[in-house]
Every structure is written in C-alpha cells, then in structure tokens.
Length: 217
Image (cartoon, rainbow, N blue to C red):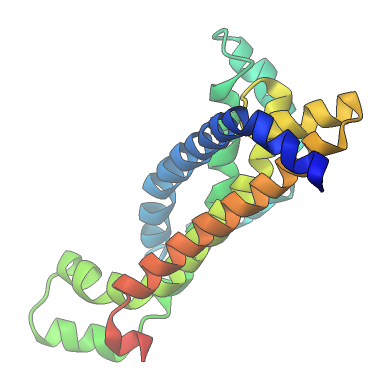
C-alpha cells in the first residue's frame, strides 16, 4: 500500500490530466447522444412500427463488442484521415449511449398517465405544451435513469478508446498490461470506478432535484 501511495503521489498530475481527458470524451459523447436520443425517443411514441425497428437496431448496437466497434471505426474514418484518436472513439461512444437513452425516453413518455394527458387537453394545451409541461416532467425520472445508465456504460467502454489513441484513463490500464505494471492497472481501474460513481451521483442529484414533488412522492 505504501508503494502504491508513493506511486500516486508521483503520478498524480498525469492521472488528473487523463481523468479530465476521459471525462471530456465521455461528456461530449453523452451530450450528442442526448441531442439525438431524447428527441428520437419522443418521436417514436407516435410511430409504433418505427419504434420497434429503431429499438432493435439500438439493441444490436449495444451487443457489439466494444473493441470490435472501435476497430470498425478505424477504416471508416481513415477515409478522411481521422482513423485514429478522438473522433472514432467519440462516434463509437455516441452509438453505445443510444439504447438506454432512446428506450427510457420512449418508455417513459408512453407510460405517462393518460388521465394527465386528458386533463391537459381539457385545459386547451397544444401538443408541444403537453409535451413540455406534462409529459416530460412526469417522465423525467425514467429518462434520467436511462441517461445515468448511458454515462456509466460509456465511462467503462471509454477505457477501450485508449487502444485507438483517444487517450483517457484507459492509457493507464493499457500501459500497465503491456508493461506488467500492477500499479498502473489498479490506478486506472480505481480512477474509472471513482469517475463513474461521481458522475452517477451527480446525475442522481439532478434527477431528485428536478423531479416534480408530486411524482417523487
């Protein structure tokens, strides 16, 4: 333990930089995934046939091994000289985040109490007004649960991004494996776990903070 603490002290600056790099990669991927997944999940509630197709595609995407998907991205983005680094890793993480976000958004909006919709219609609300004032607030906890799942998944999968030169905490683990250095492997693994817990805890706080009291109770 003393040797590991000394290792952490010596490499604290590098570990911090890699953690920030990892957080930026995952954070940007989740942001784009939200901009795609939430509107798509909402739209799918109006088209059952398309919903089934899209959810099946997203499910298949999540079953593809992460190292395989990252590998596929290399020749695809090599066409525009971006086969290695941030861009292919970013796109892969956006794809991986789609299923929990789309599925939870779709399920949450579909399961809003019909009586609430009827009451909103009785008050003369238009479709967009019902969506933003009634449906999304009531669906918010389930949507947030999907976002939290996507974030935790991406923080873990983001480790593989180091194999294609995207940096992040995976650098510690991959270097530890290649060098047989247990301190690097343990440090990278612990840092990933801590980052995932912090991100999930922060999102849980947002979920509780902005969930309507009537729903929370």
